[in-house]
Amino acid sequence: MPAWSSSWQLPDQIADVLPSEARHIEELRRLLLDSARVYGYELVMPPLLEHLESLLTGTGEALGLQTFKLVDQLSGRTLGLRADTTPQVARIDAHLLNRDGVTRLCYCGPVLHTRADRPHATREPLQFGAEIYGHAGLEADLEVQCLAIECLRAAGLGPLQLDMADVRIVSAVLADASISRAMVGRIHAALAAKDAPELAQLLRQQPAVPARAAQALQALLQLHGDRAVLAQARQALAGIEGVATALDEMERLADHLGGLFGDLTLSFDLADLRGYAYYSGIRFALYGQGEELARGGRYDEVGAIFGRKRPAAGFSLDLKELVGVLPAPVLRPAIRAPWSEDPALRQTIARLRAQGHTVVCVLPGHEHEVNEFDCDRELSQVAGHWAVMALDRAA
Image (cartoon, rainbow, N blue to C red; front, side, top):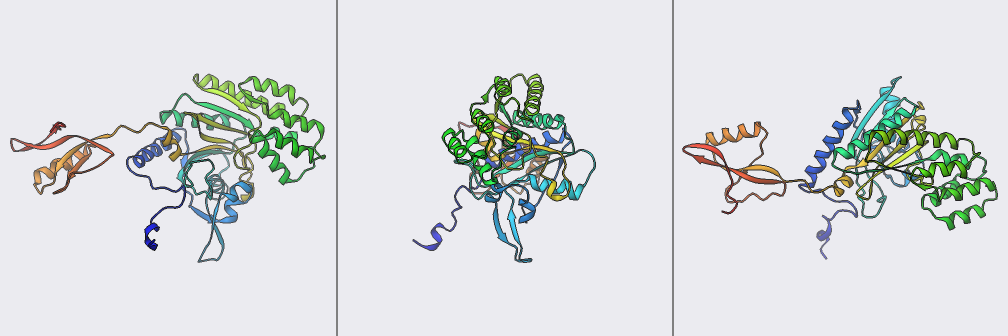
């Protein structure tokens, strides 16, 4: 096989985005950025690559495994191609803005993953996100949850399901267990996967885990469902310091969200620890069309490595994934025009474009083939003047 025969092929799970999907993504990008703007979120554009330690310090092993690494030919230092934008936004808040009060920031740009985080996903998501820094109260959690819901609703999705968890619950259960970070990670993975046999085996291997904590961990596997889960958790996890506070806060958020969005389904999964290790409190995921479409929560530790440990909450989603669950957009109406040097025709085309119409000129000898526009009208010369006429599709 000639060497050039496959040189143009893209890496696995990397793809070009073609018309009219690209246009749909771009329109969604503008829509979501506008949704964040009306909440008061300011737009930032972090670089695609940074020094590796800046990208990864304090974020946990999972993000490190997802990050492409390369060597900077100028400095010789190792760089990383961002796999998640939140650490960069935390750096901007801590170092470049350095504000005392609340800061609301949003962004939209590509991230790169060494491996797709789920089957059939892209390794080059287009990540949109919004984050609020400087407020420790539940008001910030509620704001980012509301904004996430309204972004998906503005995109045309509904009804939605919001699923809540809180990483503080498992941390509280394991507070008195003298086990390694690696073993904590394995327990987290077993809980997230609802793998009861694996969890039981891990607990048998860890005599340092108190019997009460072991029972609580096994109970967590069953604590998922509607709001009744919170009452069940109060009984199953009674007496474990810190758990009641986490349950109270989730219940308060559920009360607010239920009052604001009547068609929103609320659910809870107290063993769900998926996501990056920087989450420090309530986390949530939003589902629509049977797919998880947005994820977020509280991550008060994320800025500590940059010298400012600020309360923080936010969410992100992948615009490419979002487009995949939406119906294809209706083709945009357009006007077909002949190509000519006639000044009157050119003036007419310029006027129509200035008014916001799409005018597609058919070049000599070619029919214009597009899959993004519906040429339902044409420019025709009538009584010596150029006029827009309905296109005779039967012709």
